[in-house]
Image (cartoon, rainbow, N blue to C red):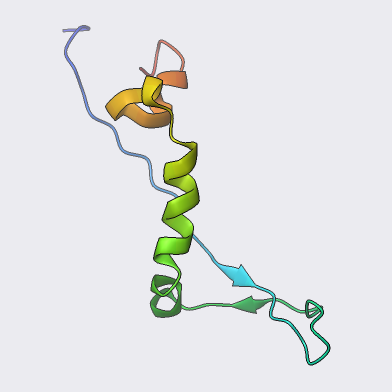
Length: 72
């Protein structure tokens, strides 16, 4: 049954770190780690650039089109 289509999903955790501007308008030297709840506030700002880079040639499979034949 080698030709049977299987679905495999690979997940990787997302950790968001931000650098805030200090009182002089420069980027702070220390990063701030955001909680999961705080990350949701940035959802649209994260998803918009991802959608912008999405190629129609990738279709529904997204980046999976670039996998080796063994994995695809």
